[in-house]
Image (cartoon, rainbow, N blue to C red; front, side, top):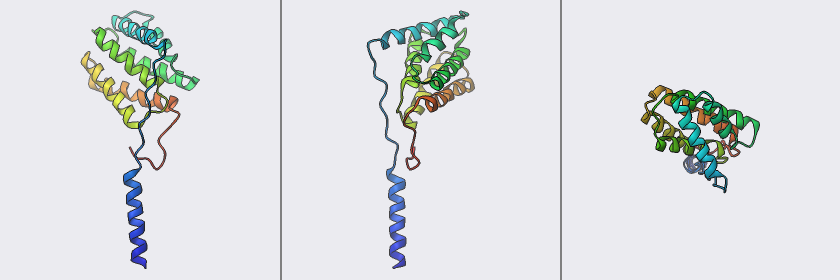
Amino acid sequence: MTFRRLLFVAVLSAACAAGCRQPDGTWPKENEDTPNRLHDLQRDLQSVAAGEADAPKDLADDLAVFAEQPAGASAARNLADGVSTSIRKRNASEDACKQLASILWKAVASRQISARQADSLKDDMRGVLVSIGVAQAEANAVAERIDQTQKAVNVRPRKWYERY
């Protein structure tokens, strides 16, 4: 009888550990205003890269619009500050700024993405920053701010029984 109970517990434990993956969430949906706001972000990023004095504040303000709560807006501003510092006076192409604008929007406007999806955003951020000449260590530091932002805006965190 003891062997059967032990076997039952072992099988149940293995099933729980193997089958409880955090489901992927939905990316934010574009509304009628989103393309204009993404274009504003792209323009702000180009201004920051060009070294304009007010551009980092404009970027932070335009990115904070996508957050619904004050904590999310603060995290969005922190993320924008990190990006601004890293791309200031860099040769950022229009395509790189467009990619960064999309990544920033997804990082702040996504409310239910999984840890895997957040890691994907971080990888994308690192890739774009490194492609415009940002050092790997600095790109990693900026990408980690996406986690901080997601902790502030995500309304569906990973449950205790869900694995990565």
